[in-house]
Length: 377
Length: 238
Image 1 (cartoon, rainbow over the protein chains, first blue to last red):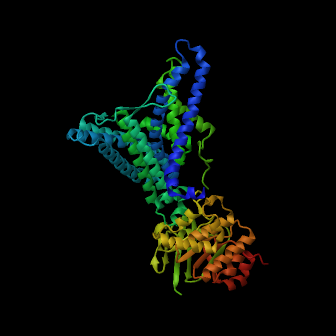
Image 2: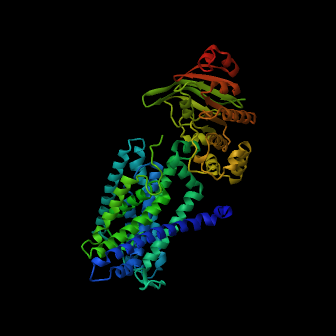
Image 3: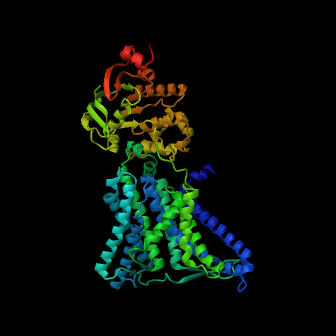
């Protein structure tokens, strides 16, 4: 056992993937059992269809939708939680960093389309380019925002940088709207159709009556986010820079006494968080196919909720919170309609997310995995 | 036997509070110099000013003749000042190994770092037993050992220790002071801040007495121990 835990392949590949699977299985099975139980309880009150059967038929799709959006939330939530870890500050402009990443990715695809290159290029090369460019621009932007809007306020009272972040958020929304408006005349950007990402793969899962359908872009989204999460885990736990990030998060003055350049580490943190947000933006754009400068608001707020749910400042918590929130939202949106026979529909899904935020803040402010949050001495 | 550290007429402030009112001191190579004084006299502030955590408004600080007064802390460390802070400053969620690695952050030579880690373990075998434990799970004495070990990882020109005896049982205090003396015999220059003046003066070569931000007395450690004011105020001898 000792040998296994010190094996780098186990520590940096198997363990994080196992953790992700455990979170998905745990949350997915709990929620599935819950809705099936509810379906049995309420089956008598619904006469025109078999509630249990209906519940089971849509279950795979609900799970897949929940996991997909859960990975998006988790990837964005990591940006909130990393910055909170080192600065104890909620970077409310992170949702706009996410939006910029998505817009940059889509704009690259539109540029390639205009050049006539999109159809002839390998679709995986195209999407990889879009993600990398989105990550690069979003990461650089996050570093710049920190330098301009937060660093000068580092010794100010805590509310001041928070307000600066909200201002930055508005500024970025309008800046993107202006740039898009000036260059393209409209500020909705629509993803060009390319490749086979919209096609479905069909899987026959033993024991499930209907075949499970997975869209190619869903597989891509889940695959890419898992690779990024594994990479982040290695970066934070396996490299010198990652250890320095953790040291700065735990005790900033002492970290500087180790010879760690604290400002550099803070910039690196914004770079990593911004790059993750940018990649999430591109993947989100691939999923929803239509973006505008205000599209970051809700995913950003949900991801913030996820970070709080998992325990703000805790990276594993952000991952857990994102997946749990995504699944909860997907279950809520789908089954509320089924159980109430359409009286309440999917539009109530946001209520689930924010009800969770309120409940967590009241009953467990430190989050699922967080420790008791105390003021630092 | 040149002067490693020279502090001249340094004034430091916390906001409007004038914490250091013209401190001058020096440390020669191979010495243990101790700063004694009561709570709030400015002992820790002196160390924080030297390591750049606090920038003085007036005065100069030189390391081996080079002006380091206005450097940021990470550059002061890179220049060769090791600072083991008050309260030890162990990273609670890093393992013992990772804490030690952070101590060698400025050195980019894994082989050298591994060798130095072995030297630290030779000095504190207890740390080797705890190598994969989180820093926060160590006892107070072990944390102090880790803090000193971590300070040694970068082989500083001068090691500044802030209250190494704080919160430790008497037997551990003695152990820590034995190790400080041993390190000094191996050639480490030490600037020691202590409230436990008895212990500090028993191992130091020279000492400075601080009162409300001023140095009121300086002499060899032996002479300070004979001094009536020191005996009365800090050693509890009537």
